Length: 603
Image (cartoon, rainbow, N blue to C red):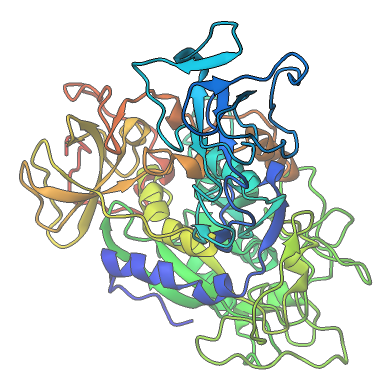
């Protein structure tokens, strides 16, 4: 990887690059067959085609009488009467003669010869054996009969690939004959929170502040469709950061903090040691310009000789811990339950030799993902070759192992798909900017979701712009206008916590009434389905696996009620007359040298 440069990528280009970064990986990921009971919140990996006609036969739409021909109609005699008439769930009834009627229930199969159904409230049985229709409701041929194939014919495409599986989709799939659905495997994401100054509980003291990103980023990624494998907190030590990234088995690693060029910013040095390819190195956006996106290079023996920075991690004894790289009580690498494999037994991060992005061990020393001594090494990847070496359609996996470390992760081909790293700035709102700019497009591709339609809205007030960069400003919707929220500094979360989206303000600013693009939040009206599978219990499990107590602070943005109208919130908006400043800047502003508003005041 080349040295960090200082020519940031334009914001629209950065989002486009992130959306394209994992196209090969997404195309070669095997779909996961899930029973309907486990498919809620997943994404269809293939179009949903009807397996039967809907309805599969002519059925009654109402309780009443099945009729044959014009009336009045002869009713069955007591000897002919068959209980309550024709009921749902029974086989085909006897043909109905012309001029006759028979009781029928909603959903029951219409007998041969029936020409219409008369609703119970529209017919009169005077007890003389004849049925008469109300003069106010004359019978029309075919009325209240749901004809076979009225909704669809067998083989019709009902839904395209990329559709989010909602409760309604589950109902449609069941009606169309499905017991299980092909779904996109959720990418596994690990969050690495960097910073010696961060506290996990209690009040700030002695220069230390609460970690706002650990409780927020994981649930945010889950709302974007990822499977959160864990959140780890690391010390500001180069070897700890290197080991955590190199040994991670996740498809996407998300780091918070450490993306600038200060003495304690270790993300860039780590990427250089791993031979990663920087796809985006800084974005022309405020807040969050130090964000980055990298493709972690496949491990292979062809790698050029190690630099001086490789000596320490490459020469340490197997199983020895990296300083600060694990929580107290967590197993050491190489021990049972750790992320690395013991000899002869595949561990959670096991995979085929040469699969990409598992770190760059010292040549000759087995590291994560390196082949066994004497085995043939992987082929050397071509530039930009991040996809599997074999072509052809991927075969479905069962849902039992598709998202487990021993499942899809352990079956990558020798030139397996590359992993990616998203580096978020350490300031909270700057990190949100990175999530929407880089993580959302990347995960959208990996999860098979379609790109959202642009959502322009007029500004209720003028918004000051940056001279050169795009600005992302929290807004709430009121009467179909985007109201800029006051607390929009890079270290602030008070604005985004009540926002409906982030307004994209072009360089130079935007006047009142100007139409600007608004990025929806995962829990907003146009994206609520993506958050439906968020499972706090799963997050607590991930917390425990990372060695930290469960039940900590959680993302509570969705607690705010809002009335939605046309995909925009029209409920309450924060009081823009509120004054005051947030205290306790995450990472003390060391990564976001904002020059838009020193006081972090109004937009």
